[in-house]
Amino acid sequence: MGDMREPLRELIECGLPQALEVMGERWSFMILRASFNGLKHFEEFLSELGIARNILSNRLAKLVEHGILKREPCEDDRRKIEYRLTEKGFDLLPAMLALRQWGQKYGTEMTENPVLVDERDRLPIGPVSILGHDGRILSHQDLWLVKREDLGKRADGSIASPSDALHAGDVVDLDSAKKAAAG
Amino acid sequence: MGDMREPLRELIECGLPQALEVMGERWSFMILRASFNGLKHFEEFLSELGIARNILSNRLAKLVEHGILKREPCEDDRRKIEYRLTEKGFDLLPAMLALRQWGQKYGTEMTENPVLVDERDRLPIGPVSILGHDGRILSHQDLWLVKREDLGKRADGSIASPSDALHAGDVVDLDSAKKAAAG
DNA sequence: CCATTAGGTTTCAGGTTGCAACTAAAAACT
DNA sequence: AGTTTTTAGTTGCAACCTGAAACCTAATGG
Image (cartoon, rainbow over all chains, first blue to last red; front, side):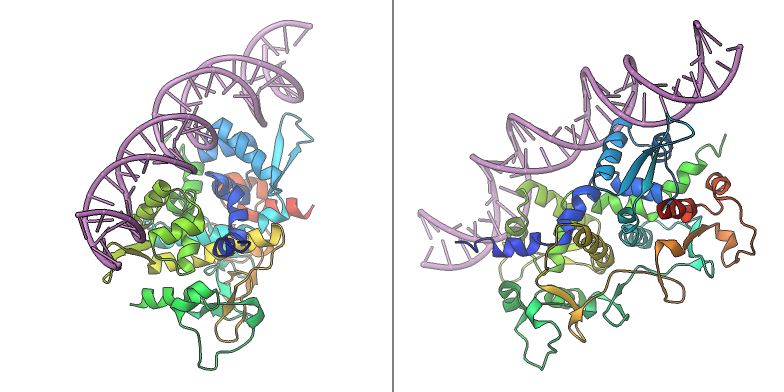
């Protein structure tokens, strides 16, 4: 009876719901993007994003509350308030760019301008990537879900069948899914 | 007068809004994650996610409509329907993982189990990363926004001031923002 | 035939979004 | 000083979206 919610917990105990609590709300990512682009003031966000005043107010407050933006009054003009990214906010950059690149890949074609570049060579950045332990770029084909206690154990030929694994919670994740995608 | 919406276009013409059209809706990412984990059937999603029936129905339809999932009737049991990830759906993996990792980094600590690993060495994957043209891992410190026609032009010492650039659309993005975060 | 399962749709209360109008405080102009 | 403008909000209200529960329909299974 205590473990009734085992499979549910598996899905809920992960960073996603926590991330979505803030960033799942409408406009949050657009505001973040605007922040990345250097916008700092209420009226700037308002006119650039085309968001409603009350919603913007609410979203900014939530982003501040979650430590993604910091809210500080301007010194030179005390009507103005600056909303600036925190380190926690900057850490959302990979997620935002991955989403952006995906949208760009499958959306109506558009030549983005300005372009996000590596400041060293001033050449466009590559796709946001999943890296292995050794730095190799991984595709979904290369991924596997393994029980924590089985980390590092290589497959010797005998692997539980994917359908069993799905319920046993052993080798679960992308096995069946990638076969399905291949077919 | 024709270019009145210049700065607005700059923010809107990017993959983000297109990505958010589907993935910005509540539950979309959670359903995607469940799909990655091998769930395929309506009632599976229903019980694992704790979502309402009507919403699930609506979300699945939207994900199918946008080509992220494909909906096909089961052959062996024609009541059942399989929802499986398309290639377009799999391409959301970096975005989902980046979000997940961010949530994990800043949320209440939790030891994820099972763990997502590189199937070769069965070791946990690294953080989702922004790569430069040369494969180097970039932080937000290393990024720059440049006009499309200035690609590859290295800075010789004379760079327009960031505040000017913000309005001119030249070197816009993270310059001021990263200075702000540093301070 | 009858019960059950799978995948929905309908209904309706309650919450969220968005537009427009209003406020309050700090500059800026006259 | 007095008026206007700018900045960052709040409030009120209609339209839309969400979620829980009940209902519907087709396919299995006994």
